[in-house]
Length: 514
Image 1 (cartoon, rainbow, N blue to C red):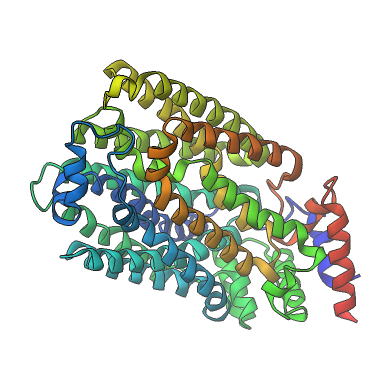
Image 2 (image 1 turned 90 degrees about the vertical axis):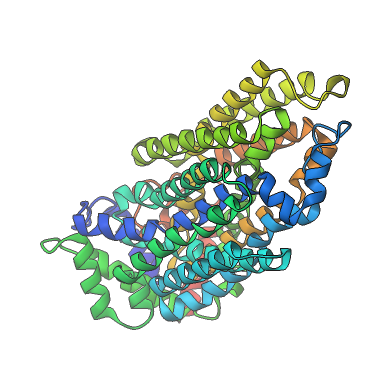
């Protein structure tokens, strides 16, 4: 049998037996610094939606949208239907796709720490360009720099957290990335709430303050060491063992865990014909399916467009600009609460339970929102709805956001970062991030047009996808809580469907070792 197979089998017998399984101050500080990379992604999600409905911003760059909003006969669902306006938001995601794919190869050569540092610096540059923008071209260039920063950090940070944290609490530590993402979103929406009151240039403050979380990321990346797996992969086992000892504690026995890391990396090197090429093999079919399914389903929850365009949605149902941003602040607070709760239960209740419970709740909320909009918005050519029903939409959006924050929000980062073996880990994460960002680009570019065309049915569309993904997770996702990364293959080997592909992977590994 291949050594990697022996290591996985041995690792499964000591799932909770690593000597360094306890939580130390060093691992907490290190992981918090790495998780802070989520701040820049979250800040951008929160700031862009608020800025795009600020009248001072629209007056300078998109006066035709502002004129259309004031038209008495304008369709209630179509107030913000402008492709250049949505391009301002969506351009970040297409840049993120390109950078995440590049980051996969760069990470194998320079490590996860250097990639996080580069991402923070690019985001800082983008925030400066956007704050100083005098035309749409500068806005788009700044957004693309922000996208490059998001792509680099979103590829590296979750893997850093998964490789550094103790197996027993890996879900909570990896979910910290999403906690910081939500904190970034909350900071942005609060910023928008106050800068919206500044006539003429309040939007510049909102966009420019993106430099603050970027500085936090840069400083954090300078202070953390690289992960043991990354150091071994780059041929520096002494530093790798020292890094592992540091994060597990000076008195911890890291021998077994370090041996498993070394064996897993050696197997990756023996089969180093290319991670992306390897994914085409039958033995990696289960990884490829999850690599595509998880980010695809994540975006089809509809949360990314709701997070970005919630101020626009609240303006659509009848709130004024200031109250629309306040509604986004409330959603961000609810999301933060849900994500924090999720970090405490994800390693106890498990990934599958949260996926299923969250999916059912999200689906019910979307159907209810569709019903309210269908019955009370746009009737008799009215451009708003009664205030009580508008508040009902806000309450349902809060319940939806809470369900998402407990499930798909953090788990979208947790599960992909832990299921891939080391030989495809960087490539797998790059594919996951790039697919998610590609779909985010498509959705942010067309959401306002779809809202205009489909009206309330857009929420039925998303509810249908939530039903599909909930069934998929129930049938095909194995439970991974508490399993060491180096023993993750055994989880797939026990699954009723995926075990046939794990067998093929072992045979391929044996052939490569001859």
